[in-house]
Image 1 (cartoon, rainbow, N blue to C red):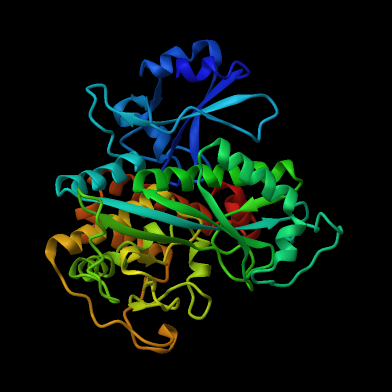
Image 2 (image 1 turned 90 degrees about the vertical axis):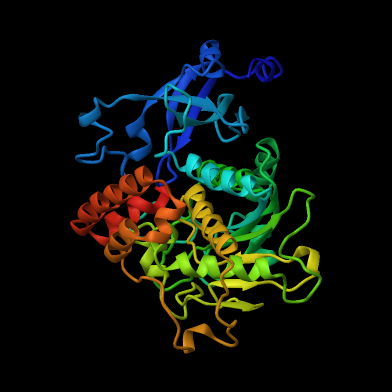
Length: 443
């Protein structure tokens, strides 16, 4: 911290930030002259800060609040900070943190700690996951009562039609994307190719593969960056699962493989179909997929995306080179053999999403279970096991699931269930417009 600040004398303030259970950054602003206490590990948040609802309110009857006296947890810098915050007018540094108890043990209600717990299980076997994510989002004009596409900066006109892989649409927003890529470079976010997607005003940027924790950090930071930078350009950006009822939804697809201690991809056996461990990982992902629906579809709006025929997987199945399947094994050279998990919406918490996916895959590898045969053709036209299609059921199943309990710590399961039940009660009393406005930038 001290060395970084010495090379960035322009920094005037610091933002401490941790991801809550919804992936919302929570934290505080600190004058740069008090940066030392962050590096010393003496900064604190209440434990309850990582367990707020989507509006930022305490969870009623949570044991983290009045029952325990709303105690503080201790914050430690992650290995990702400090980072510049290119969207702010005044130079500031973002310092990502995660939470521990006073004795140094991890706070198990912290979503980043949940992912670390799974990665530690891999490490105990001499394995390490490699992951990459595809980040879809919409650029929107939210100045009126209804959402709309923003005017094209080049012409001022609104083109309300899908335009898949349109270079003209990308070029029309070139100023925004140029600033975004520059900012990604400053924040060490490995942004690769950008494309225009199937929804009006929808785009996708792929983040390059790497260490799984860094991939989760990248996704979390990228969402923060895109939403903040869009406002500087006069429009909004949203990762909500379904901003327009009649348009494509927003996905967050994850590609992953697993390396051994020598850096070899254990999914590669030299064949076109992949190794036994690949099949076992697929089987593990499929076994936990139904019960983990709440992780992949965490909000009211999430279930508007998860309908048949809308490019979001609804059937629990796998296939080679088939984007209608929940799990796709892409073609390519054997050394690049990997799994693409296609279920999650863009509104997920990236830490919880990767915890669910990688934890389930490891369960399958440990148990050496076999998946059913891969499907062929359109999954929507076949009789297959289905994902949960309602928020209430997803919450209830997640709470009591044995596969979920094998992946996530009990404290996090309890906290997330209490959070989602509170949000469900509130959302039931709200209008569609109020729900939309809640999710537009929060997720």
